Image 1 (cartoon, helix red, strand yellow):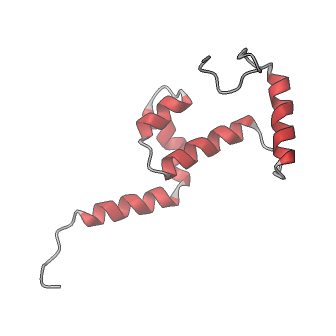
Image 2 (cartoon, helix red, strand yellow):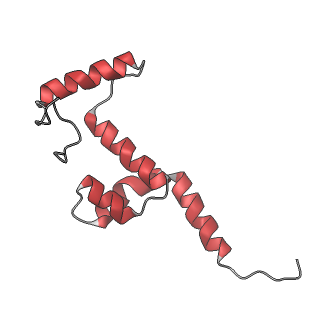
Length: 99
């Protein structure tokens, strides 16, 4: 296993223009609008965070130098993450048993 995400049939690194060509063909065949590799990276990070993946794991996935970069870029666009955090925080507040 090469550890690479995209390889040729024998595991060698893809030539970037060829990889982009394949991406266009795959997106077109799937009926999707054209998408850039950077967009796929952004989607992967956003979906991972929405699924509850720890920010440190996403930082490592993306190769960011520090966690604050990842948080600055991705968590501000996730209302679901903010809502879940608020719900978890509210759940910590003691409630009266008289309700």
